Length: 579
Image 1 (cartoon, rainbow, N blue to C red):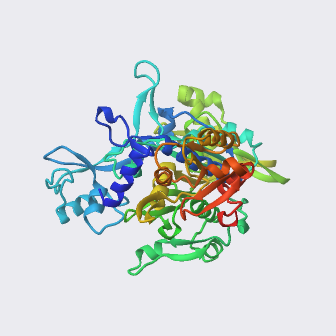
Image 2 (cartoon, helix red, strand yellow):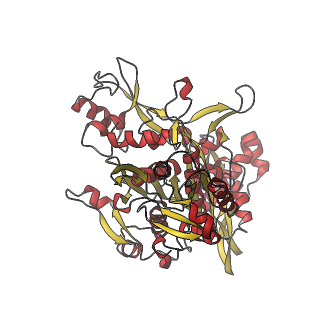
Image 3 (cartoon, one colour):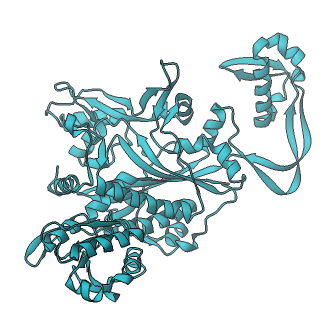
């Protein structure tokens, strides 16, 4: 563990941000408990995301179960393709992610997208060893390991289920009902904030790679032929971009550009992705991410999911490494088409035409009196297959017989028994399968990044100080309230001020323990942006001292004005220097 990460981890545990769970029993890798400060910070980040991506965008929010039945993940493809590469040490038996072993010990930065045989060859070429015991890994088989946590729903094993690896499927499986809530009008968005689970081979780097984490996801359902975003609100947002061309160039570098420029130049091909990149850039800056240590990186072809037409990651530099904070993917109609095919529900919406249109429509009217004796129980499936074929390939009915496949078996039907025809039909609209735009955020990683980027060390009055320069809007506590001393009525007055501020909806902590300077340091270390001190002048003129964390500057404010003043400072509506 690096010195920087060790400092942050020690502060996080000591001050109640996060700690490894079940420490009394030795702990377990990949699971963390958020303490009082961390839980409050996490909630504030989630609420900030909800306000920006759900409320201000006019999107719905749902809360789906974390356990879902096996057919959901058969349809989504997670049971077959949700794997990481595992290599096991021949000496100590430790399991490691093979791509991480490669990235940590070579100059190869993106090993995850490489094939297994490539990874095996790299391990042999570089003579890589087990990170635990140092035994050689050359010649060891690299295998696929599915990351799903399996469970049973109800007694016995007849109803297998899985802890969800992403919150998205809880939205996709409910699409038919959600579309009704949206009156079948595209585009519409559905958000969700909740826990997800991945049985990571080797959790590491504190909150950056864990087995249980919180996601904040938005699934925007669009008509790909008609729906376009209004980019005017984000067109001038500037951010660093790292497209594929720059990544593959020998001297490639980040490109500083506005959202308008990357769309006009085709750097970001999908305008909806660009729209959410613009929103995200502003949001990350607002919650305290250092934008000098931030970038948008385009996925290389080898690492892009098979369903994604394009994908960009928001990344931040943490402890010398670039880590993924969020993904922005164009998922096309992959998810809804999969659930449509595997379930008994219709995952389309009806698109009304401006005016009815007359079209030629291939149809079949199979003679079931002939299909029944010929195919028995499969006759109905054969008839359905004929209807699908007529729509997909009308030319297949030009011969004397037509062949269809049902459950892997080919059946031939006489063309005259299929009763194929092309009819003129007047239609008021059509059923379409929406495409999906997905901004997906890891809340835990955002929290860790904000803490890392907020960490400061300086000197105040010749004394070393550690503080977290957190934005007031997300800080766990907005204001600490202290009596200068707990005597002469100062304590009672300070407690009354604290109660008054709590009633006004502010997050308040009260502290009368130790010297006033030590109390300031305690609040600085957990990122409290403002401290209020009740002193003897308060008893005379009903004013208090308000201290700002980063500069340690102080102002006198009337107690009557205090709630409004602190709310204005927290919400960015007032500046401390203007008090």
